[in-house]
Amino acid sequence: MLGQRGFTLLEMLIAAGIVVLVTAMSAPTVRESMFNARMSAEASDLMANVALARAEAVRRNERVLLCVSTNYDAANPTCTGGNWHQGYIVFVDLSKGGNHNSNEPLLRIVPPFASGNTVSSGGVTTIPYAPSGTTLPGTPAVVLTFCDPRTGRQDAGRRITVNTTGRPSLARWTC
Image (cartoon, rainbow, N blue to C red; front, side, top):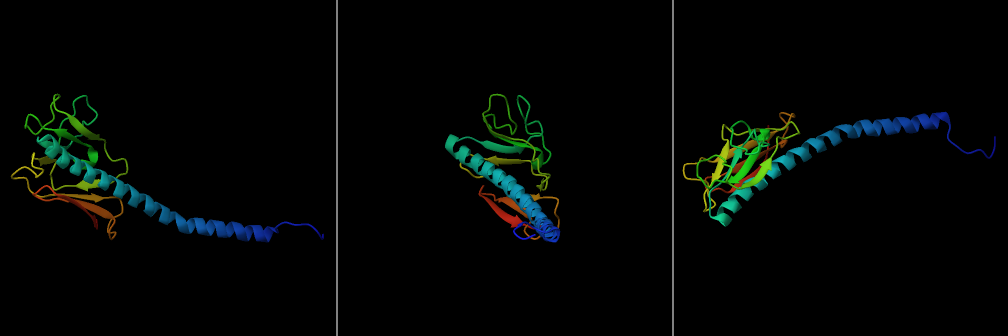
């Protein structure tokens, strides 16, 4: 059969085996990349919202709060307590009451994390900023630790620290 071109069955099986092997080897890497991307995005979003609260407090010369809100989707969301991965709001606290009222501007509404990542905060559910851009007097340093389903992984988590002067910082963390 001279002049016929094509692949033999053996060559096709070898090529298919190589494709399966390469795909199987890359699947865990893709999964890790997805976990890392979600973790980074959610931690960066919260970090940006902390920075927004601080900047708006200075710009408006008013007290601005960032707080956990599990009723974030209500007509008038309030600070409910709970955990940061359940949703949170940023608002101008004109009444200085520490909770959102209907006449106070909402700056940001963030729904719960869809990724399954969790945030531990040591019970802190509010980050209040004074008009000077510092946290309110008596507010301890805030530490928010992001973890995902992977445990014990070096640099798998993220940690946001808001010091007593109100300055936030973001770092990698081992969960």
